[in-house]
Amino acid sequence: MDPIRIEGLNFAYGEGDLRRPVLRDVSLTVHAGEVVLLTGPSGSGKTTLLTLIGALRGMQDGSCRVLGREMLGASERDRVALRRRIGFIFQNHNLLGFLTARQNVAMALEIEAGMPERERLDRAGAMLAAVGLAGHEDKTPAKLSGGQRQRVAIARALVAEPGLVLADEPTAALDKVSGGEVVHLLRDLAKSRGTAILMVTHDPRILDIADRIVTMEDGRIVEAANAA
Ligand SMILES: Nc1ncnc2c1ncn2[C@@H]1O[C@H](COP(=O)(O)OP(=O)(O)OP(=O)(O)O)[C@@H](O)[C@H]1O
Image 1 (cartoon, rainbow, N blue to C red):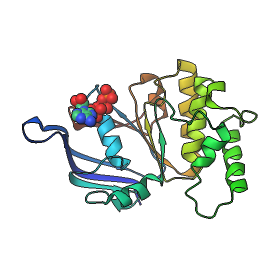
Image 2 (image 1 turned 30 degrees about the vertical axis):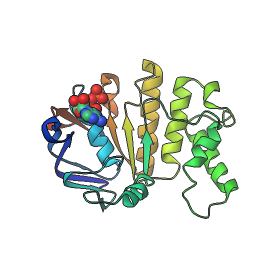
Image 3 (image 1 turned 60 degrees about the vertical axis):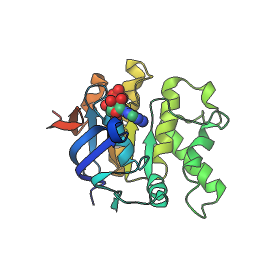
Image 4 (image 1 turned 180 degrees about the vertical axis):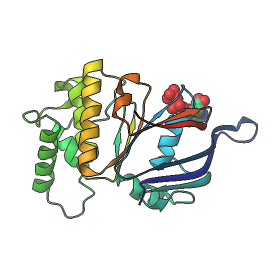
């Protein structure tokens, strides 16, 4: 099953005279285990597309199957259920400041009905070790560097072994070295688990992690190239 299969997707903000189309006839398939980068000018519709795929917004027209579920016509309940099966990574990490790194990661396992807390915390610890944060498990985000916080966000996105990770500008707040390290780590961990990644980025420094680069312009996909 392809984690993402989109056909003929259209989307507009506003209604009546204020209606503004922002996605036009978008078709895109992301295969299992594939790393796809979504680039293009500001305002071209990248984040809107990512939020539709992530079931953070309701579909209007076309077909968008994510992890096997059709999102056109899906209820809020279906969308919540799908969101729980996706790992999300945002620009500003979205960690909870009053929880430790380990607790932030363990939160992503709370949906696993019946998993005892001890096991959740152990799995969170193992995932933090996999992102190079052994010894930092009990620190709150304020005690970590920007790059370390984004590693915690990666651990949180991957710990429940999702079939798909959606990332929106994950390196925007990081310097060149930390940004490069963080996305290479994300790519390697996702590859070893067969997790697909769709990442919105403006960052030309990280294009080398992609299996495929998809470019958007004015709401359309204008170019899909295999990475060198
Ligand atoms: N909630 C909203 N209501 C109305 N218009 C919106 C909303 N969100 C985005 N837009 C508009 O939709 C268009 C596409 O925005 P979107 O954020 O998807 O583009 P983007 O390619 O991700 O841009 P950037 O790279 O700057 O984040 C833009 O013209 C934007 O102003």
